[in-house]
Length: 166
Ligand code: SME
Image (cartoon, rainbow, N blue to C red; front, top):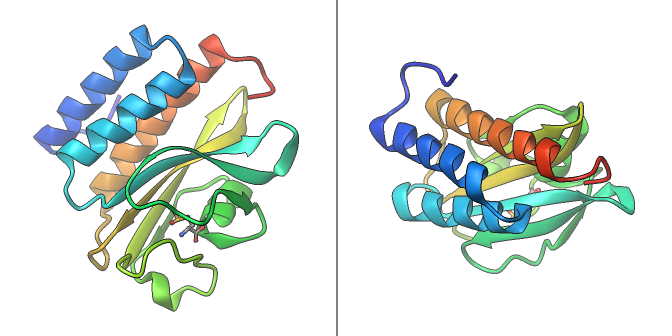
């Protein structure tokens, strides 16, 4: 269950994600629905996307569904970027000032802060949710709880619908 101090918008989104996960015909459909809902409801989330570990190369993240400016980072080695760090650590990474973090791979000149939340299925990291904001230090404990619950919903969907290579 999500923690009790989430905002109304986030509770509404999480209820929608549970509903989407119960009816989505595919992982691709679920991730698209989630990024579109987040972009519509949370204005400080200026780029929202999924990255997945390549089933044929567990050392590389591959861009999935996203809403925001096109990014040059379609494939990211796990050894690089804030995205790579979150996958390698298996932990949420919050960066209040991306320009002060030497790991940061630039996607947009406007980005000031970023949060990356790993998605686990079948006991291992399979991907992550990556959010950029144009505001510095945009992501609070509420955002972390919201995105970690979203990652659990997606991970549970993968366990129910996808093989262990996903
Ligand atoms: N900033 C990320 C790269 C992905 S873009 O933000 C979409 C990173 O440092 O890994």
